[in-house]
Length: 483
Ligand code: ADP
Image (cartoon, rainbow, N blue to C red; front, side, top):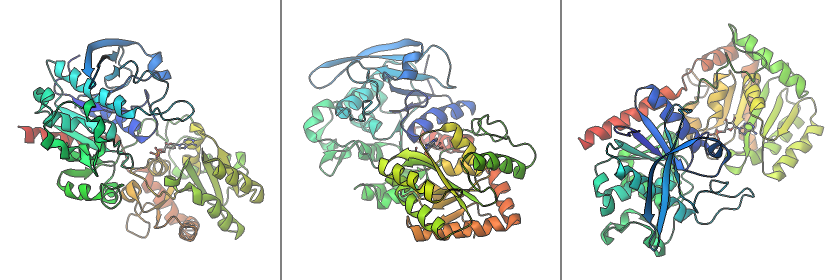
C-alpha cells in the first residue's frame, strides 16, 4: 500500500480505534473527508490493546527497530485488512510500550508514567517506517504534543536527512498538555547538533508542544478564537504563539453530518420531514413526558462532562437560582464526572420537580434526543478549543446559549446581531448566565423570531467538507513552498 503523495496523519488517538476526546474525532473524520475530496490521506496511531483494535484483522506492512539510547526496540506496522473507515489506518505495534488496555492510563485512571519513552518510540518508529518507503507521503500532519517532536526530527536530525524535504503540519487540539521532560532524557532522542537544542526547549525543559510549534511548516488550532486565547493563556507558551503568528491559523472542526442528520437519526422520537416545528414539538414532548418537565415552557439543557473546563461546577447554583425565583422554564442536565457535582445536581431534582431533571451517566441516544427536543442548549465552558455540542444543537434546531470563548465564539453569533444564531455571555458566573436565560425566555415568547432563528440554524453548514477544504488550502500552500 504505497503512501506516495498522501497526507499521513500521526496521532495518539483516532476514532473508533482509540478515543479519549476531540483529538480522536478529528483524526477519525478529517482523513475520511479528505479522501472524499480526492485528497488521499491515511492515519497512523500506536497499537494499543483496546477492544476495537483487538477485534480487527491486521496485516503487517513493515518490521523494524528504533534505538532508545541504550537498547534497540523492535516494532511492527500493521494495517487493516479491510477498508472499514474510509481511510487506511496504520497501527504501530511496539511491544512493552503500547500493548496495554489504556491510551494514557490504566482502567483505574492511573497514568502509566512512561509517556515520554512511549511517544518518543512511536515518533521514531513512524519516521523509520516512512524512511523505508519507496513512495513517501507528501506531508506529515502531526497532532498534539505526542507527535510534536517529529517536525524537529525531520529538520535537524541527520538520521532522518532523507525526509528533510517533507513538510510537517502541527495541530493543537489541547494546548494545556505540553508533554515536557528534562534534558536528562535527551539520550532517548535521535542525535542532533547541540546548537539546535533551543528548537525543542521551553523554560529549560524539552517541550514537545513547543517543538511542534517552532519546527512545523504550519501551525493550526481547532478554532481561530482558541488560537487567540492560547496567545494569552497557554501555560507559558503565550510568547511563542505570538512569535509564530505568521504560520498559524485556526480551522473549526466539522461534524459528521451523516451521523448527525435530523432526517435519518434513528435515536430520535421523530425525524425531520417538512416542518421544523413538527420535528421540534414531537421530540420535545416525549422528552418532557419521560423526565416530568413542562412542555409549554422553554427547555434549556446541558450535555457534557462534569469538568471545570466545561463550567459544569456552576450548574447547581444556576439551577437553584433560576428555579427558586419561579422562572417559567425547564432545565435538564445530562452528564457525568465530578461525584460532588453529580450528588448536588441529583439532590435538586426533589426540590424542583416538574421543572428540572438530570440524567447522570453517558447516554448517546438520550444526547441525540436532547439536541432535538430542547429549545436551548447551555454551554458555560471556561475553555472550549472547538466544541461540538453547539453545532449538533444548531443542526437539530436547538439554540445555543454559550460563553464567549474558543470555538463557541467562532461558531455562534449573538441574536443581537444580524443573522444571530444564539445567545452569548461573557463570564462563568450565575448572574451572567441568568441574564442569558432571561433573554432566551424572551426570545422563546416571540414565536416568530424564535422559529426564524431555529430554521436558519438548521440550514447552517458545519460539515467536515468545509473544514477539510481549509486544510487542503494549507497542504497546497506548503507543497508550493517546498516546490
Ligand atoms: P469534549 O471532547 O471536550 O468532551 P466536545 O464538545 O468536543 O467536548 O464533545 C463532546 C461530545 O460528547 C458530544 O458529542 C456530546 O454530545 C458527547 N457527550 C458528552 N457527555 C455526554 C453524556 N453524558 N452522554 C452522551 N453524550 C455525551
